[in-house]
Amino acid sequence: MLNRALIDRYKCAESVATFGLAGELSKDTGFFRFGQETICYGQSVSGFRSIHPAESLYDAAQDVKVDGSTIKLPFDPAKVIDNLRLERYATHAIPNGSRRIVKKVVRGAYYAVRPLMPVSVRKHFQKLYLRGWHRKFFPRWPVDRSVEEILERLLVISMKAQGINEIPFIWFWPEGAPGCVLMTHDVETTAGRDFCSQLMDINDSFGVKASFQIVPEKRYSVPAEFLANISERGFEVAVQDLNHDGHLYSDRDEFLRRAKRINQYGKEFGAHGFRAAVLYRNLDWLPALDFSYEMSVPNVAHLDPQQGGCCTVFPYFIGDILELPVTTTQDYPLFYILRQNCLTLWKTQVRLILEKYGLVSFIVHPDYIIEEKNQQTYKDLLGYLSQLRRDEKVWIALPLEIDSWWRARSQMKLVSENGRWRIEGPQKERARVAYARLENDRLVYHKEEKS
Image 1 (tube, one colour):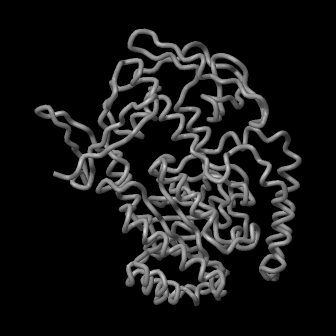
Image 2 (tube, helix red, strand yellow; image 1 turned 30 degrees about the vertical axis):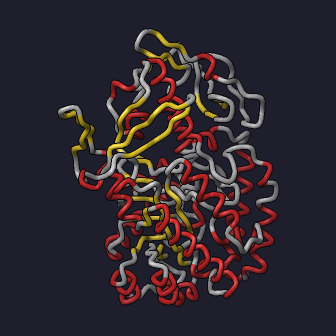
Image 3 (tube, rainbow, N blue to C red; image 1 turned 90 degrees about the horizontal axis):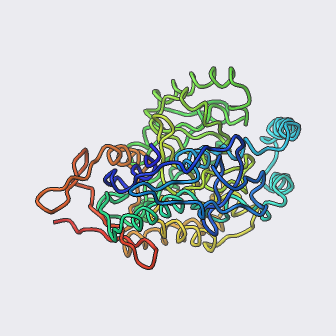
């Protein structure tokens, strides 16, 4: 169904949108626009598709047609959104394979000597590798919200076509929260592991719980009492890779072998979530991992070794696994690539995400905030997030809490009863009825208060 992505986002009545294709989809795939700024990737029924997002792109919005109660679209929104969320544009649009092979060789050499290099040396190699990142046109830096923009535009078109000024839907977050914050800590070294207890003290001083992603093999020992201390203090444990050597996704057979061991560690750790080292990923291989949620996909990957980005600020399902995307810049590139020890970039990203009521997720490594200057920046961040919770009622949650909520919301239904709307499904007492209203061709949201 062409309206499935829209219904899944808003959890509204299916009658809100009836879509059909305006013609036969093209054989080729490429980039095109849907409106002035929103970039799509995939097939379309009209115009042309470009091989590079920085080229002059055809605007498919001009080809939307209304045929009675059906809106004829020039592309399949579900496929286009999948192409963004699953980063298919990043793999399909690679001009040739030789560059990928060269990068693989360079990556292998780098990871062979990485443990011997201090940050002061490593950062120079990484700057060289990432040179020109600021000239990348797509995804949009510093936060890409293309998926949200596509779905909002489709809802506006549908409402206008049907002469509807307002539609009810199930709000995105529990208790009507205007957004969600997720703090995560990837533990890379023995020094980082040994700093975790102090880091939990810092987090607790601001009332911000977090998850700790632990490398099971080779990097450092993982005593049972270390894991128990994290859980007993109300924090969460997740598995990070297998051994952090940068080769988890280099070979399919090797990945499957490692996945069995990773799944075993997940059971031993009592972990429900997974993250790959350095955010390397192959989303087609995820079904081999036996976890409820996954956290390896950046929103914009300009400052990561693997380029791409999911172009959304919301969780989304990849099969049965819930993806919790990384929507802000990691601490390492902030401190050592961009050389910023302030909240300017993080605050900009937070505001852009909360404008769409999305998930604000952070990776802060205990390894990199042992230094006092970086640690103070992190404390400033926690103070800012605490203020958002106090003043704007933003929900600060652990990944398993978000996973539980998002799965419950996916099963909820909006039901009309005696002229009022109510919600049925798991955790319905935490859910809120909301309304999307058209004002000057833009969507404005408002929520019902709990009765």
